[in-house]
Amino acid sequence: MLPEIIKIRRHLHMHPELSFQEKKTSAWLCTKLDELRIPYTNGWAGSGIVAEIKSNLSDHVIALRADMDALPIQEANDVEYASLNNGIMHACGHDVHMASLLGAAMILNKIKSELPYSIRMIFQPGEEKLPGGASMMIKDGVLQNPEPMCIVGQHVFPSLETGKVGVRPELYMASADEIYITVSGKGGHGAMPHECTDTVLSASQMIVSLQQIISRRNNPSIPSVLSFGKFNTVGGATNVIPDKVLIEGTFRTLNETWRSEAHELIAEVAKNTCKAYGADVDVNIMKGYPCLINDSKLTSKIRKSMVQYLGAENVVDLPIRLTSEDFAFYSQVIPACFYRLGTGNMKKGITSPVHTPTFDIDESALEIGMGLMAWIAVSQ
Image 1 (spheres, rainbow, N blue to C red):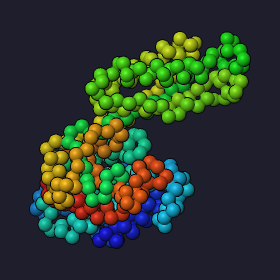
Image 2: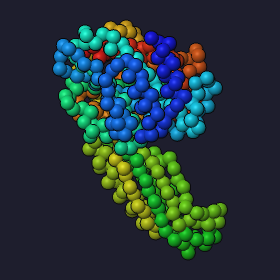
Image 3: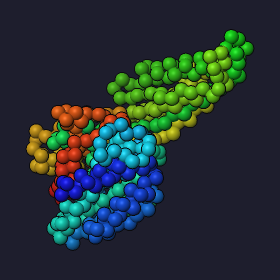
Image 4: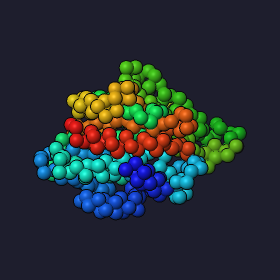
């Protein structure tokens, strides 16, 4: 099956679509499910698909999930399957996730008369964009009628060599919130700052002050990060102080109580710092994905399944990380396990991280991607 799954992955890679715009991707996946005669419903959260292979032996259900959306990145890889959509790329491996889940579906469909429970396959839109397709599909009832015993998801991991997988029980990935700040005041001539409000200076000092929240107000035992990626003026020039400065950033942590406290502190420090410089400030914090928690009991069983499938030497224990995933929403509702699929190959020079224009995978990883997911589904 590997050659067929490679073709599927390459087709998906060549035709990426942005978050909540995955209409053609969804339609194409539906044709594949039709070919397999696997029943499904579509239109979940706009373009999501839920397929199910029924078991005659049990009423219980296990859910498997793959995300569908791509990123607004121009691909730089010189390969025959490079993206055909200008400025859009599967730079986070969601093409691999869909292909692996479809491959697992093919395997499970061949043995459906022996399945110990039904398998629900979730092709989810919008992982890369708030509010997150997972939260929307949950609201639409994807975890109901009946509620699955658990849900499993996998994600590419280019820093891990192909042939290996990684997993971590309990707290694994951080919450993620988006921060939008507008600093405003009366602009003016750069040679006469005393006659206006220096919004650039105010905003700059505010960013420096906000970093003290992490270094001095946070318990050092709680991993947290506050980063700002955009700092733009509305107007302004070499000799013109602008009326407004627009700032965007992200706050991430692994503690939900501290998360709420930090939101209040961010607003408080921003307001008081800008006030000291005579500027006004508006702070908008969009609460994003929660912390991702892998259920201990389920993850322990899945790790044993991984060892059975790949050998103990090919299963690694992962550290916590401050990246985020909307799979976390599922983990807040039912037992969940999110693991990593090694897709790197140093000898072949396949080492670029996700979210970069040169990201790619060792396609032999797809064999494990689909096979392990199918094995996990029937061995719990």
